[in-house]
Length: 586
Ligand code: UDP
Ligand code: MN
Image: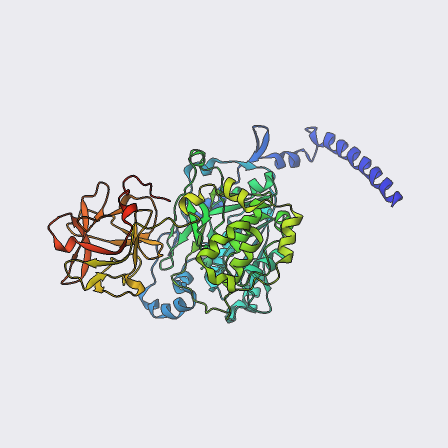
C-alpha cells in the first residue's frame, strides 16, 4: 500500500506540473491548440459568478420547422378513410389510436408551449449526464419509438448517455428481435433489457436503473414525447444538489388524434386519504417566480429525474411493490423525509398519452394494490396511516409481507417523521383533504316533491354528460348524494361534483366535473323551509325537474314551483342553520 500512495502523490505532481505547462503553451496565441481551448469555452457566459450555457439547439429547430405531414407541430391528425378499417383492432390493445400514430413521423415536430421566458434561460455549463429508462409492457411500435427518438433528438448529445427500454414480458412479436435490430441500426444509444416474466412497472424501472451507468436516472412512460430543450431543466437542480428529484410538466397527447396540448400551467402534487393522486395550487411566491422550478410534495409518478446516487442511497423503489400503485408516494415520501427535495420544472415539458381505457388484464389474483399501499403506509406514514385505514379498513386484511429492509432504509438514512413532511412540505394538504371528513349538511336520497316516487338518479351517460334522469326512488347506492361540507353536491363518496358552468340558458344542465372545492359553479345550498336546492352565490337559481321526461336542470328560483321542491334523506339541521357562517371546510 505504501508504495502506491507515494506513487500517487508523485503522479499528481507530475500531472499538475504537466498541466500548468500545457496551459501556458495553450494560452499563447500562437499555440496550435489555443483554438481547441477557446472552442470549449464557446457559448459559456458567466452569470452571477456561474458558468452558464445556452442549450437551445437552433440547427435542429430550423430543420424541424420545415417538416410537413400528419400531426406535425402537434396539431390534431386524422386517419385517411381507407385506413379507418385498421383502426379498431389496434385501438383495443392500446387504449389509444395506435394506427393513427403509425401515420405520424417518429421525429414529428411539436409546438413550443413553454412559458415564454424558457427560451432565454441559460443553464449551468457543466451538467451531469443522464440515462433514460423506459419500462414497457406490450407498447405499440410507433409510440414506443417516438418516445426514444424524441428524447434523443431533443437532447444535447453529450448529456444523454443511454436509453434503456425495459421489456416487461411483452408478448407482441415486433417487440422482440425486430426491436433490437431496429434500434441497433437507427438508434444505437438505445438498448432493450428484458425481464423473464411480468414484474410490473415498478420492478421494471428498478431493473432499468440497475443497468444504467449515467449520473442521473430519468424515467419515462413508453408513450411520451419530449419537447424542445427538455433535458437541462431536469438536470440543473440535481447538479446543484444531488439529493434532488425533478419532474417535468406533463402535457397531454390526445389518445384519439395525437394533438399535443397543455394539461395546465402547473400544480403541486398531493394525495387524498384514500390515496388518490391529487393536486394542490401553486404557491403565490412560486407563481411570481415562474418559470423557475418550484417544490412539489408528491410526483405524478411516471416521468421524473433523480440522481442515481440519491436513488440508491434511499434504496431505489421498494422491490416488494408489485406491478403498479403506490410507488409515486413511496419515492416522494422517501425523497422528502430522507433529506432530499423535489421540484417541478416548468421549462421541461413532456407529453404523455393518457389512455382512453386500460387495455391490459389484471395480471394478479390477489389485491396487490392494497398491499403496496399498506407497505408505503406502514414504513413511511407513522401515525397518519390510520387516516387511510379509517376509510379503507379492508387494507388491514392484506399482509404487507416483509418490510424490514424498508424500515432499515429509513433508519440508515435517519429519515424524518411523516409529521415533518405534513407540516413542512404538504402543509396545505389537510386544508384540501382533511384527515377526518367534516360532516355533510345533507345526504341520502333527493326526492322530488312534485312526484314523490321519483328521486335524483346518478345514472349519467358519462363524466361530462348531464345527469339525465329522475328514477324510481330506492335505497340503492345510485340514489345516494351528499351536500358536503365543501358546499358541493356529489354522488356519495364521489370525486365528481354537480357543476353548472353556464347559467345563461333558461334551463341550464347540471354537469359533473371533478370536485374543486372552490365554491363558484359548484356551490349549492339547501333551503330547509322551502325545500329548495339553491345554486350560486348569491343563489338566484334552483334545482328543477321535468317529471314527464325525468330531466333535471337549473332554472330561476320560483317559490311556487312544485318541481323545484326536494326532500333530502337526512338533513343536519344544526349545521345547515349555520351554513352562511361556516367556511367550506371542517
Ligand atoms: N408497464 C409495465 N408493466 C406493467 C404495466 C405497465 O412495464 O405491468 C409500463 C407501461 O408500458 C408504461 C408504464 O409502465 O410505460 C406506465 O403504465 P401505463 O402507461 O399503463 O400507466 P398509465 O400511464 O396509463 O397510468
Ligand atoms: Mn402511461
